Image 1 (cartoon, rainbow, N blue to C red):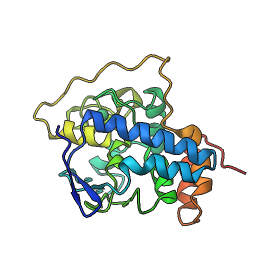
Image 2 (cartoon, rainbow, N blue to C red; image 1 turned 180 degrees about the vertical axis):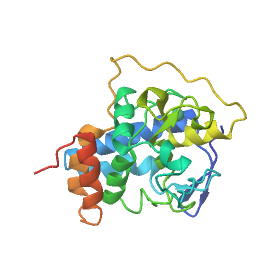
Image 3 (cartoon, helix red, strand yellow; image 1 turned 120 degrees about the vertical axis):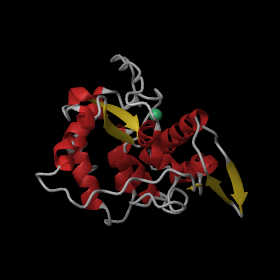
Image 4 (cartoon, helix red, strand yellow; image 1 turned 90 degrees about the vertical axis):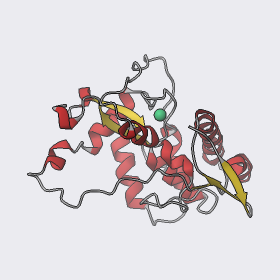
Length: 225
Ligand SMILES: [Zn+2]
Protein backbone atom coordinates (compact mmCIF):
# COMPACT_ATOMS: atom_id res chain seq x y z
CA UNK A 1 0.00 0.00 0.00
CA UNK A 2 1.25 3.44 -0.81
CA UNK A 3 0.20 6.66 0.83
CA UNK A 4 0.03 9.28 -1.87
CA UNK A 5 -1.21 12.75 -1.29
CA UNK A 6 -0.91 15.88 -3.29
CA UNK A 7 -2.23 19.32 -2.77
CA UNK A 8 -4.96 20.84 -4.81
CA UNK A 9 -5.53 24.30 -3.49
CA UNK A 10 -5.38 23.60 0.21
CA UNK A 11 -7.15 20.25 0.12
CA UNK A 12 -5.24 16.98 0.31
CA UNK A 13 -6.59 14.32 -2.02
CA UNK A 14 -5.81 10.96 -0.51
CA UNK A 15 -5.41 7.97 -2.79
CA UNK A 16 -4.22 5.28 -0.39
CA UNK A 17 -3.84 4.63 3.33
CA UNK A 18 -0.66 2.95 4.55
CA UNK A 19 0.19 1.62 8.03
CA UNK A 20 1.75 4.89 9.10
CA UNK A 21 -1.37 6.80 8.03
CA UNK A 22 -3.58 4.43 10.04
CA UNK A 23 -1.58 5.17 13.19
CA UNK A 24 -1.53 8.89 12.47
CA UNK A 25 -5.29 9.10 11.94
CA UNK A 26 -6.03 7.18 15.13
CA UNK A 27 -3.53 9.22 17.18
CA UNK A 28 -4.90 12.51 15.87
CA UNK A 29 -8.53 11.50 16.38
CA UNK A 30 -7.77 10.26 19.92
CA UNK A 31 -6.33 13.65 20.83
CA UNK A 32 -9.19 15.48 19.12
CA UNK A 33 -11.74 13.35 20.98
CA UNK A 34 -10.13 14.07 24.34
CA UNK A 35 -10.21 17.79 23.70
CA UNK A 36 -13.84 17.67 22.61
CA UNK A 37 -14.63 15.69 25.76
CA UNK A 38 -12.96 18.49 27.75
CA UNK A 39 -14.99 21.09 25.82
CA UNK A 40 -11.75 22.56 24.48
CA UNK A 41 -12.81 22.93 20.84
CA UNK A 42 -10.06 25.44 20.04
CA UNK A 43 -7.49 22.87 20.98
CA UNK A 44 -9.38 20.17 19.06
CA UNK A 45 -9.16 22.29 15.90
CA UNK A 46 -5.39 22.57 16.27
CA UNK A 47 -5.07 18.85 16.91
CA UNK A 48 -7.20 17.98 13.90
CA UNK A 49 -5.16 20.31 11.64
CA UNK A 50 -2.60 17.69 10.44
CA UNK A 51 -5.38 15.64 8.82
CA UNK A 52 -8.04 18.33 8.35
CA UNK A 53 -9.72 18.71 4.95
CA UNK A 54 -8.35 15.44 3.58
CA UNK A 55 -10.69 13.76 1.13
CA UNK A 56 -10.74 10.20 -0.11
CA UNK A 57 -10.07 9.84 -3.84
CA UNK A 58 -8.72 6.29 -3.77
CA UNK A 59 -10.06 3.22 -5.49
CA UNK A 60 -11.97 1.77 -2.55
CA UNK A 61 -15.68 2.18 -2.99
CA UNK A 62 -18.12 1.01 -0.41
CA UNK A 63 -20.02 -2.01 -1.76
CA UNK A 64 -23.63 -1.19 -2.49
CA UNK A 65 -26.19 -2.72 -0.19
CA UNK A 66 -28.22 -5.42 -1.84
CA UNK A 67 -31.77 -4.26 -2.41
CA UNK A 68 -33.19 -7.74 -1.94
CA UNK A 69 -32.78 -8.36 1.75
CA UNK A 70 -35.73 -10.67 2.12
CA UNK A 71 -35.79 -13.54 4.53
CA UNK A 72 -35.35 -16.26 1.92
CA UNK A 73 -32.25 -14.94 0.23
CA UNK A 74 -28.71 -16.08 0.87
CA UNK A 75 -27.92 -12.49 1.77
CA UNK A 76 -30.40 -12.52 4.63
CA UNK A 77 -28.91 -15.73 6.01
CA UNK A 78 -25.49 -14.21 5.76
CA UNK A 79 -26.50 -10.98 7.48
CA UNK A 80 -24.99 -10.37 10.88
CA UNK A 81 -27.01 -8.42 13.43
CA UNK A 82 -25.75 -5.05 14.60
CA UNK A 83 -25.53 -6.42 18.16
CA UNK A 84 -23.40 -9.38 17.02
CA UNK A 85 -21.09 -6.98 15.20
CA UNK A 86 -20.70 -4.81 18.28
CA UNK A 87 -19.96 -7.89 20.40
CA UNK A 88 -17.31 -9.08 17.91
CA UNK A 89 -15.63 -5.64 17.93
CA UNK A 90 -15.56 -5.62 21.73
CA UNK A 91 -14.23 -9.18 21.91
CA UNK A 92 -11.42 -8.21 19.49
CA UNK A 93 -10.60 -5.05 21.52
CA UNK A 94 -11.50 -2.89 18.49
CA UNK A 95 -8.35 -4.07 16.71
CA UNK A 96 -8.26 -5.12 13.07
CA UNK A 97 -7.26 -8.78 12.99
CA UNK A 98 -5.85 -8.38 9.49
CA UNK A 99 -3.33 -5.57 10.06
CA UNK A 100 -3.35 -5.53 13.88
CA UNK A 101 -4.05 -1.81 14.12
CA UNK A 102 -6.73 0.12 15.96
CA UNK A 103 -10.21 0.71 14.56
CA UNK A 104 -12.68 3.47 15.42
CA UNK A 105 -16.38 2.61 15.13
CA UNK A 106 -18.14 4.45 12.34
CA UNK A 107 -20.63 6.07 14.75
CA UNK A 108 -17.75 7.70 16.67
CA UNK A 109 -16.23 8.99 13.42
CA UNK A 110 -19.64 10.34 12.39
CA UNK A 111 -19.93 12.10 15.76
CA UNK A 112 -16.53 13.77 15.19
CA UNK A 113 -17.73 14.80 11.74
CA UNK A 114 -20.84 16.31 13.33
CA UNK A 115 -18.49 18.62 15.26
CA UNK A 116 -16.16 19.36 12.30
CA UNK A 117 -18.38 18.94 9.26
CA UNK A 118 -16.03 20.53 6.73
CA UNK A 119 -12.61 19.56 8.07
CA UNK A 120 -13.67 15.97 8.72
CA UNK A 121 -16.22 15.22 6.03
CA UNK A 122 -18.59 12.28 6.13
CA UNK A 123 -20.72 10.84 3.37
CA UNK A 124 -23.09 7.96 4.24
CA UNK A 125 -22.40 6.21 0.92
CA UNK A 126 -18.66 6.80 1.16
CA UNK A 127 -18.78 8.92 -1.97
CA UNK A 128 -15.31 9.43 -3.40
CA UNK A 129 -14.19 13.01 -2.89
CA UNK A 130 -16.81 13.66 -0.20
CA UNK A 131 -15.43 11.58 2.66
CA UNK A 132 -12.45 11.85 4.99
CA UNK A 133 -10.18 8.81 4.43
CA UNK A 134 -10.23 7.98 8.17
CA UNK A 135 -13.73 6.55 7.68
CA UNK A 136 -12.01 3.52 6.13
CA UNK A 137 -10.72 2.73 9.63
CA UNK A 138 -14.20 1.84 10.86
CA UNK A 139 -14.46 -1.80 11.94
CA UNK A 140 -16.49 -4.40 10.08
CA UNK A 141 -17.23 -7.97 11.07
CA UNK A 142 -16.04 -10.40 8.42
CA UNK A 143 -16.39 -14.17 8.06
CA UNK A 144 -13.24 -16.21 8.73
CA UNK A 145 -14.55 -19.14 6.72
CA UNK A 146 -16.43 -17.50 3.88
CA UNK A 147 -20.18 -17.87 3.98
CA UNK A 148 -20.05 -19.11 0.38
CA UNK A 149 -17.94 -22.05 1.61
CA UNK A 150 -20.19 -23.00 4.47
CA UNK A 151 -18.93 -20.63 7.15
CA UNK A 152 -21.60 -19.58 9.63
CA UNK A 153 -22.54 -16.08 10.72
CA UNK A 154 -22.05 -17.06 14.34
CA UNK A 155 -19.69 -14.66 16.17
CA UNK A 156 -17.20 -17.53 16.53
CA UNK A 157 -16.72 -17.33 12.73
CA UNK A 158 -16.48 -13.54 12.66
CA UNK A 159 -13.49 -11.24 13.11
CA UNK A 160 -12.99 -7.49 13.27
CA UNK A 161 -11.40 -5.91 10.21
CA UNK A 162 -10.96 -2.31 9.11
CA UNK A 163 -13.39 -1.49 6.31
CA UNK A 164 -10.35 -0.98 4.06
CA UNK A 165 -8.70 -4.24 5.14
CA UNK A 166 -11.97 -6.06 4.50
CA UNK A 167 -11.91 -4.78 0.92
CA UNK A 168 -8.20 -5.59 0.51
CA UNK A 169 -8.89 -9.10 1.76
CA UNK A 170 -11.83 -9.62 -0.57
CA UNK A 171 -9.72 -8.35 -3.47
CA UNK A 172 -7.16 -11.05 -2.88
CA UNK A 173 -7.28 -14.24 -4.93
CA UNK A 174 -6.71 -16.37 -1.82
CA UNK A 175 -9.86 -17.69 -0.17
CA UNK A 176 -8.56 -17.55 3.36
CA UNK A 177 -5.87 -15.08 4.25
CA UNK A 178 -4.09 -15.51 7.55
CA UNK A 179 -5.82 -13.67 10.33
CA UNK A 180 -3.58 -12.63 13.19
CA UNK A 181 -4.24 -13.95 16.67
CA UNK A 182 -6.84 -12.27 18.80
CA UNK A 183 -5.26 -9.84 21.24
CA UNK A 184 -5.16 -10.80 24.89
CA UNK A 185 -7.32 -8.93 27.33
CA UNK A 186 -4.51 -6.56 28.25
CA UNK A 187 -5.00 -4.44 25.14
CA UNK A 188 -6.57 -1.19 26.21
CA UNK A 189 -8.27 0.28 23.22
CA UNK A 190 -11.98 0.99 23.24
CA UNK A 191 -12.36 2.59 19.82
CA UNK A 192 -12.84 5.97 21.62
CA UNK A 193 -16.24 4.80 22.88
CA UNK A 194 -15.54 6.29 26.32
CA UNK A 195 -15.66 9.70 24.62
CA UNK A 196 -18.53 8.97 22.24
CA UNK A 197 -21.35 10.51 24.31
CA UNK A 198 -19.36 13.68 24.97
CA UNK A 199 -18.56 14.07 21.27
CA UNK A 200 -22.22 13.62 20.36
CA UNK A 201 -23.16 16.26 22.95
CA UNK A 202 -20.85 18.74 21.17
CA UNK A 203 -22.17 17.86 17.74
CA UNK A 204 -24.92 20.41 18.11
CA UNK A 205 -27.48 19.47 15.52
CA UNK A 206 -30.24 16.98 16.24
CA UNK A 207 -29.88 15.85 12.63
CA UNK A 208 -28.37 12.51 13.61
CA UNK A 209 -29.73 12.31 17.17
CA UNK A 210 -31.66 9.14 16.47
CA UNK A 211 -28.69 7.53 14.70
CA UNK A 212 -26.44 8.19 17.70
CA UNK A 213 -29.08 7.06 20.23
CA UNK A 214 -29.30 3.77 18.33
CA UNK A 215 -25.54 3.15 18.41
CA UNK A 216 -25.09 4.34 21.99
CA UNK A 217 -27.70 1.82 23.05
CA UNK A 218 -25.94 -1.00 21.17
CA UNK A 219 -22.55 -0.06 22.60
CA UNK A 220 -23.99 0.45 26.08
CA UNK A 221 -22.92 4.11 26.15
CA UNK A 222 -24.99 6.49 28.28
CA UNK A 223 -25.87 9.84 26.67
CA UNK A 224 -24.54 12.96 28.38
CA UNK A 225 -27.33 14.37 30.55
ZN1 LIG B 1 -6.71 -3.38 9.23
